[in-house]
Length: 213
Ligand SMILES: [Fe+2]
Ligand SMILES: [Fe+2]
Image (cartoon, rainbow, N blue to C red):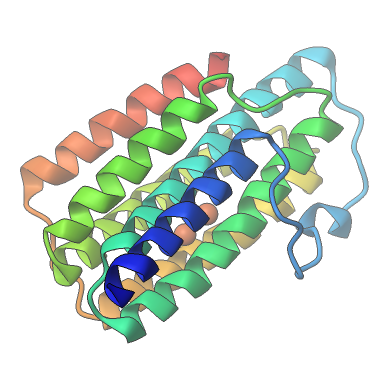
């Protein structure tokens, strides 16, 4: 009975977090906003639109990260792993908040498909969790690796003058590397190549759509 109750509590908590994400009011984080480490630069209209597209992709990734970690928390069997994942999840909240803030600064907004990214990743996160902790950790590690590839790519595509976005992306990159390391040290299994490929395909679809919508 207790177990059922705590599962229900977690489920309700997750749904609430999901609603918070979808209402575009992410919980304020404790860490300072990395964008504030650099002054705003003068971007042309086209540059602004381009950077907003990149930040919208990052925001979509962070919405998906919320779902992924929440899905994990629902199914993780090991309490220590759950706690470590919750710490990573908290940092993902920072990322979500930073991306949202940068989009507002660029007079733009998150992807209109955010609900889809959240629900889809919550489902995938829960599926990975059901497969067992080691596979689930493998999924987290691979996701973080792919996110880092994206962030590297975005650093190359940013206008050289946009130091504010650069600071945000660099801090996120550092955090994602740490999340991947935590998952690895907790015993992540290396995912089979076809699964990695499928994940890469899904993330390409997300990138393509979130940049535009
Ligand atoms: Fe993140
Ligand atoms: Fe992460």
